Image 1 (cartoon, rainbow, N blue to C red):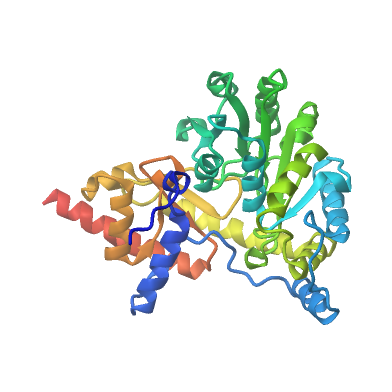
Image 2: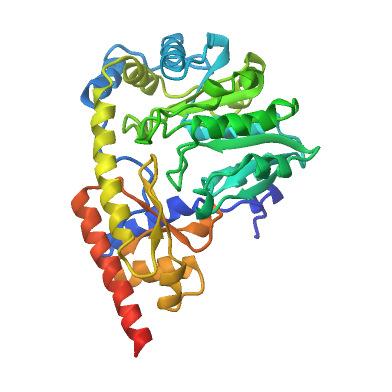
Length: 401
């Protein structure tokens, strides 16, 4: 018997980043000494005081269903966080707690998109954005920003991409995969394009907000463009900032009408996020924040080493990032040197010959690049870069003979 699946699911593909991590794990299980630089999660343990919040929830029997939208305790912590860090004011009816920030973005797409509605997505983009849009029967409209413009789209590009079908813009800063972050002036300029477009909603993905070392304080869109308050969904979570990826808590703030629609989607799919995780997230957002600063300092040290070393490799160019724990390297020269026709082929060579797993840039809408995660120890990065250097040196030597 042949099992058929929906056309909807046939339109999308499995997550490339998860595939890379899974393949690296399989090779390690086979005895290969593979270093995976594909993981999108911190290598630190969840800080002890936060973990204790989850343990306490279990001990106190806080293990039952909560409201679909989240506990009032966590909502209040989120409201305080938005006011403290972003200068954005919300009420409980404007907050939704989700099973990771990823679910918040999915809920948004499902709640506001009708068939053939267009969604503007700057590229390089996080791999799931276009597929989430497709699952909601929308149409991704990709706007490409290359290294020459620091991987950030311009107001002119945004304006040119808008059509009568445009319903949503997704903006991620600092950006996965590039680490690029928009300045206040850049956000204001993009916002001014959208102010006169009342049909267009904005999804702001701030999940890497706390992993940042840019020249000026990081701003969220509504911080500098408050005129868009009535149609912006500001999305965040505890996964990256607090090393809580497995706890699966995201959240968002938005007009209450949008939150109600997104909660309806969630209520008919996953219902509430884990009650235990919600308690831990409350502790994370409300408690001592020094753990965030310590992790951020380590990420910055790794970033500086990785970017500097990548730029010493033949055929590789890598712009410094302002945040996240990724480096995004242009490898077109290195690809040519070792005879690779695509970044996928290049990543395969690094895996099979160098035993280093990276994610091809084409997965992020930027062919000719690779993404390397530095959510690992400095020693691991040093070992990985030595291996990549040997692969590229062998390729250059073979080409010269």
